[in-house]
Length: 151
Length: 287
Image (cartoon, rainbow over all chains, first blue to last red; front, side, top):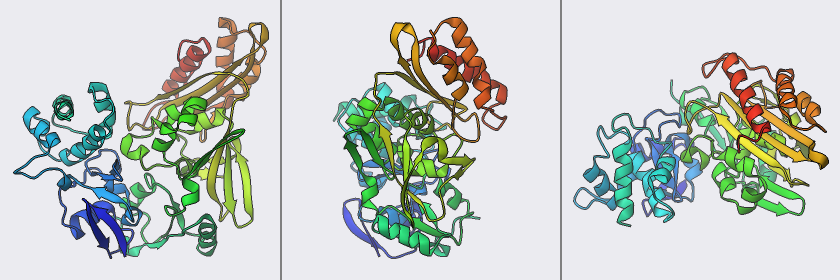
């Protein structure tokens, strides 16, 4: 049995230890917000946070999440009460087709949470592992900047 | 075909000693560190049915130790942790720069220095820096410990000189005994996520009377393994770095490297860019 903290709640997983974290999240914990893009660590669509750090959940066997704190996009806001970051994406047009959005949000969440410098350059560096084929990134960076200003 | 989790056997040792023991019992097991490369293959289904030696519980290999003559980086230390370490930042900036070019944040938070070496890609981002810092790879196996100099750790593309049952426990970087001017450069299609077309690390130690006491020059992605430019280094030793000397040293590059055409680049492009990089570094134009 693998024990982990998922979005603040203690959970256990009794399936195959080599199941990918993304599959365990989607199939066993019914958290389908996390999307799979490339399945090879290039696109960042499947980004979740482990102990506060962005990682690709398609490259992690669930056994390696044992004892860790995992956060997914479901840990942010709700449709009724968006988080600051989600509200920033909505206001600035940071999402179009939406496939990259959960990963973008989680990587950006880790970045703005560090309380370090949060300007155009630092956001672009932080998000370099998240690919978006719709927005051209401009509005995503604006969205994160807006949320960071409200920190 | 996709990876089939149920087909896998997962060994999860809790200590270094247990890891070596488990590996001896199941020699066909594939060691797993951060998984950033192994899991790509697994997702494609090519590792189905295999045994995996998951090293993530081996706490003693996750430490960075500052010792009197250098730094001992545990094999399971991530590229992100290396970049954040104050002493490594101060003493080994080329390694810090190299770690910052591995994939992007998600990969740097998972990928480990030991995994990078064990994987033995010709394009391994940390290798040119480790080569010029003359790192030693320390391995633990059924017959105990041994140190392998960086220039002897690789046998070819995706091949190391590790013996059966051996695992990397740490990488030791000795402090430089004298001040040096250094540069790390990676050339890829974009700044993040790209696998390099060519990659360079260099250190220059000035001697008395304006001559060069020692040069350490290394390229990645230009041969099956990382290469030091031994011919150029020997030529430069004791000379003044004037234009004539620099271009003569650059001519010697192909004694030690032999790039190929592949999906990322061509032999000609790699040679021209690498030569220009080397010349610019020797002239002090890249910092």
